Length: 109
Length: 114
Image (tube, rainbow over all chains, first blue to last red; front, top):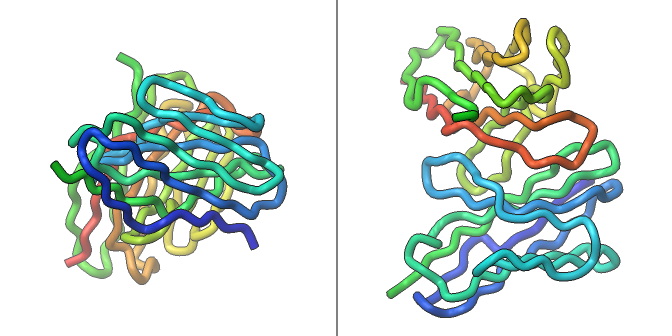
């Protein structure tokens, strides 16, 4: 089967750094997405990785290792508004999007 | 502004009734999708459409139906055959299917069966 694993919930402090991990097992790979979803709202696109390495975009960075089936999302200088769920999704060889259950990130002052 | 619009945001349905959720996009995207989101689970694909007048079943299509008569519109009907319809429903679109492209989401419709 195909599956994506992420931690269910993480807690971090305002101003700190947090790393959210994602491991995947899919039939082929054509890219990995990270989305942010605030409670009761639509997911919004954060990043896309298709090659190994780190992609940096402001306070957010995303890393990919295809050989390990592993990605992480790194959030720096955490703000209260970063409290949300973070969804990892992988496009497989049929270009189907396989979604993880999401990681709920709680930011404390 | 271009975007994807779902309506209504909240919907209540009596058991045994069919209900239709609206999804409209003005992004000129070919591909459109319907997902269901339940607490503690990833997004699950109900139906998707790659082009007008064509659609395919996703992983959990039973009890649902769709149509794609216009490029901009992809309504989802939750029928009385769906045994557990209470959920958060998300519509999405992307430029084309068959490519690793970003999906844009509507605001979602929270359906509650009473």
